[in-house]
Picture 1 (cartoon, rainbow, N blue to C red):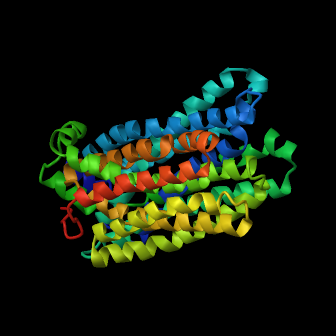
Picture 2 (picture 1 turned 45 degrees about the vertical axis):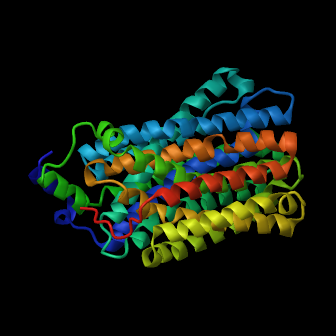
Length: 434
């Protein structure tokens, strides 16, 4: 694509207002993470009984968590695929495509019959569509972060990069809030029969909104400049692994703490709270909705701090606090006391916001324009394999065999891994993106 043809296809002469860029980067990630978390919540509540005919609730939970992890295997594949086109063709069109893939996969999950209706074909179809969710989300985050940071004015990349990071908080709040409303208004039989499908089908409406917004945005200045200077590479993934392997690995390891904090405190804790601590489903969902508000509060605070003090200092403090938080898991979550459980969930999700916010700027800053979409996406999603894909599964095994103290130790180890990665990184706050 030539620079002339590129500019000719852009609305508003290729210019965007800051508010349009911020909203486009935020709304897409919010919708994509809504789709992703809808499945996570369903996996903790109903996927096991509906799709896996085990007699043991623990076996059903483990099977559901295996399907949950499939998407994290798919996410790096999505980042390879969409990253290639994002670095070759442009950020805008690639973001539109990733949103379509995610939305279609999520909506179709809402129509897959259960095991009682079509037998073993049910979990097969479920796994295929879950894989599709992973492909779509794998291409989403890197492009949304680039859309925000490549438009950011000097000294405000952390702040602009924060808006895609708000997407998970809002997406989670929307998905859990909808499940909460269904849990309150429906009987257990109604919820298991058809109610759990509603949040998946609602995704179609949200995706249509996201597509409308993203079709209105223009290509980023950094990518247009790369086109004009003929700086694009033929195979971005080959250049990435050939020349930028270490930043990719360090970025992936730095992400581990974010994923582990989030999925242990949401997916595993929800399953454990309902099945072992015997919380009512709607009550625990309400606690999570309350706690995730503090994740959203921490996100802009951490982003501002990363612009002022640097990405590394903020992440170092967040990782150290996350290491310590693992030691509180048994006494708080294991107590079964509503207030102690709420405190644990709030603490973990607040630290998730602290460690997650700087990543919107940090990961794009690790790579040049020619491989930035691919690099940021691959690092982000490789971190997902390490920190999230197996986290609920491992946590369930640890809880069964050693109790919550072992699960808390798992959280601390994951945070320690990210701390080492951050200490090995260079500070990127003042790096130029073009």
